[in-house]
Length: 130
Image (cartoon, rainbow, N blue to C red; front, top):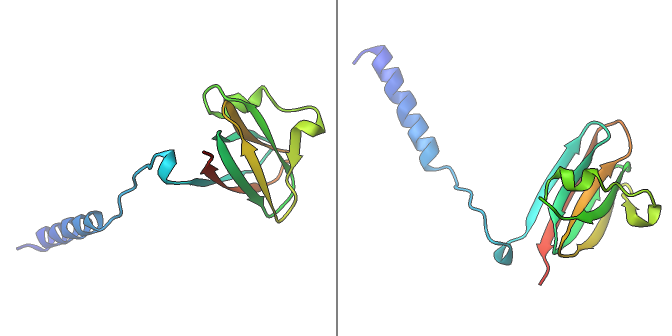
């Protein structure tokens, strides 16, 4: 066997081994699992987090964002873009290093609006409401 053939064979066997032991991701229905994620932005934005019905937990290490609910249409960022609340009673500001728990009803989507032109990170976790 030549050196080139041996190297190619080693690469193929190594790749096959990695693929064989790689865990497979599988989406679970809402009834059996919860959902979680991270939103990282570097400027002012409005983003959709998760549609209802759900119990949402959000956390940020810094202030500079608000959470609000918008009518669900597609579940994407567009649902939130036209619905940025003007009244402070419609939005909940995120305090630094505090957990916020919010109930998102059916037909609604939870949205994040950042208020500063700086990096912002939001950690979220949602549980399906019965």
